[in-house]
Image 1 (tube, chains in turn blue, green, yellow, red):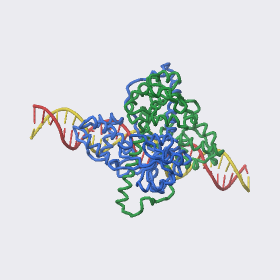
Image 2 (cartoon, rainbow over the protein chains, first blue to last red):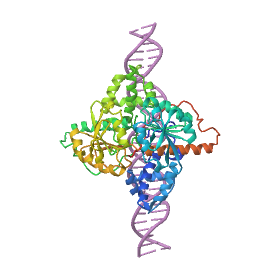
Image 3 (cartoon, each protein chain N blue to C red):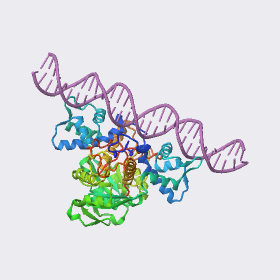
Image 4 (cartoon, rainbow over the protein chains, first blue to last red):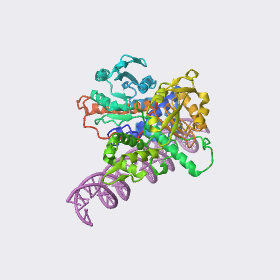
Length: 254
Length: 254
DNA sequence: CCATCTTTGTGCACGCGTTCACAAAGACAT
DNA sequence: ATGTCTTTGTGAACGCGTGCACAAAGATGG
């Protein structure tokens, strides 16, 4: 389950389950790749393999959007790209601000996957006066003092927090007060927000800790099983799925 | 449910549910903060609030680890920190390699949350010969040619992929062949790995798309409800929870 | 026009995760 | 020692998500 959602116990927005929404970007990515190769149609089986999910799950996911497939044939790639994009709200422009231009903030500013998905970095904001005016990824960094004005002038509703943990809640409060209603939080802190505001978090440290847990478990199991096989000599039956996805994110402090 | 897991349909490792494992780092973070403030004990209610989860859920989570609380009093902070650290395998050193030292890779290398959690950046690897030898975060970048040797010499079992999407699968294959059994993938691709290897993915683009979906839904609902309230003037009842967490991660290409 | 074959869309059952609600356990005061 | 009060640990119910398995739908060929 994705951590992001903040309130709304488990409501499915407009009939579309949260787990499905979380997979739509995955399908979209696979479909975009097919589209670039000028593939006209795909079966649920093929697309599911490309997205790393179960084909039945994929069909059920699409059924929430409507009946966009043709039995005996499959799905029209272009049409599906459009439908999913529209459903995700990617047919419109989403101005985004990034607050906290440290190593991570700068990396995010330079990230190319924004524009291609309808996201536009409207402004970079940092508390360090020395950063003000300095261009990062071709965009001049602005000072935190102007945060409210920047949000309002650009009609920003999505904010990315890449500040140190200590500053995150304060930045969050100001973003929300200024009108931001969706926040992607990279700071390793639990953010408190009013009802109606969505928060998703990404925490690298948490992801690594989860990996460490399984890694440790593998180690003890191997010791217990005591099959003298070489560590690197894993079973090696070419993997099937990528994983159910509907999982937990990671946190990434500045 | 977290996306990371690759195989093992839904098995609960050693009796501890996956959803619980994903929350342990959250508890650990909150407990560490309490420990630094020299707080001796916490109730499940207090700790749950600090971690942004339901107190019943927290108690059930801890019950999987054993009975570490004292009724009428709460949990001993230091003891719990130790138990969770041990459970997560953080009492040992985990050498980690980062492959792909672009903007993101460099940001990860500079990330301070590694060492404090038992993770040590053992090496930085990049395919660009021009990068070789250049220090990033005080560590000299090494060339991809030496990947296998680096993995073996350092006994690395956890790899971080921060390369462009096109190179990810190839890098992944080499990491796995060299003995890596846990991978944190920032490239926007579905990785195929043999059984026994865990993959977790972090995709920024996906997280933003999920936020956009909810943002769009809010917009249409507001239009439908037609209550002329100002966008920025949200309900404002100081938020309760942070969100159940067990969600879906995001991907972040280089 | 009919038969066959492919692939979708979904009813159904199962299992995990969440939450409630309460009994059991211990601390603390008298 | 006994009673009261607090907080844990968990039994049980509920709901969401997943995956199987199949009927319905349409394409395609004769």
